[in-house]
Length: 582
Image 1: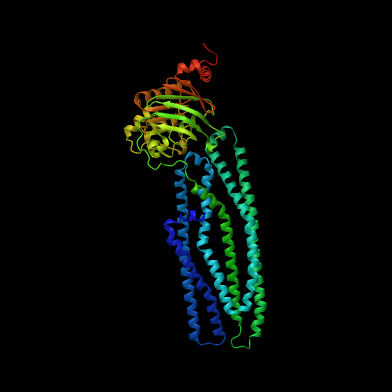
Image 2: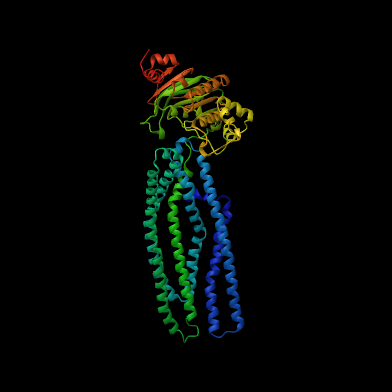
């Protein structure tokens, strides 16, 4: 986990290395200041000359300024390195996710990925900053203060060796109890983000069904779980302060008791233990125990950050199960498609096949319709063509070449898929359409929109093709969104065009015009149309009927109407009103 995260330090290695060095220098001077103060007080107490007093005073001022400078510099470096680390972490996570296959994406919910890139990164950033600064400062202060304490009075310094283990055991117990709670909290965060995301995306449905109160209750329940767990963890962590105060006061009382005896006992000795040295020893007591308290805070922060760090590493270490071959093919000859003995299951569970025994050949330039009930794996079938998933068994070929032998970018640029869930992005209509082809001219954009029957409604907008699209395409209708997505796919000038129920929101006349445009202007492009309406596919060269993940019928409209029961049932229910054969 540490190795994975450390790679994200990147160009901020210099600041990361300099921070502990600067902290170490700061600590040295911080620890020397009480010691010099003791020397100054001893000189004053013994009636030393003004030169000695000014000398020690000058050292105190110089040490204070040096400690201040290096402390400020270490803080600056720590802030730069931690912010840069977090930036690189988010960037690497985002870039890693771009390479995921659909199978990889299925492992994480979108709300979980958002939590990992925001909340989780924030906790890891805080822990990183504390590790390179405070985690260095605390043990150094502890070690140097102990050395100086033993230098002042070894017998009294032994008190620390009895108190420190008590504090350490107490902190260990606190951390051990709180860690499982924080692990649970981040799972609750995922759930909360999922509720918010679903609500925002489906707010129109929420209002239509008057479910606002139900949604509020779901949010409140999720928030309450986070509150309860965090409160419980904070209550346990709150024992830090009384434990630390007990240790500080115990050390102070013991030092005062035995120290006073030492001062009185050594009063007649010219080099005896003095009151100023006792005061300095108490100062070191505070430094030692405060360093332990800071150390405990680091442990707490690292404990909190451990669960988010693991979740981040899950994203970073997830490798796409779809990779480019060593010597990929960079040319798709034509749009022919072959499925040879293809089986497919999500997560490679062969006992739960979504597609089984699929054998299919589609000639380049053919128009193919796919009909089938919900859950018949129509969408799953077409997702194997551009390698959004890989077949569990068998071979899928495009242009006579196994899809696994193609360069992924080459293959996917040759296959345009208008998915069932149409998505538009914030920006102008032109910017959205140029997702299909960044170099498309205005004339090409207009031509694609005319083919998809989108030009008419775009022209009716005051800003035309420069009209801004809201996030998710909220300011256009479902049918308009579908036509824009079809136009975007056409701009790729693909060898294979797949419409996955992509005209369901348009009227039958517009649907017919879109299909007519395809036939006239894209004769060499293989067109696959998944539809629920018989009218959308009945003119296709070949119609595939699917049921239960299998191809149960294939042929043209007349052949299937005469031989296939499922096709007959769909046809008569839509066209003949379910009245029976004629």
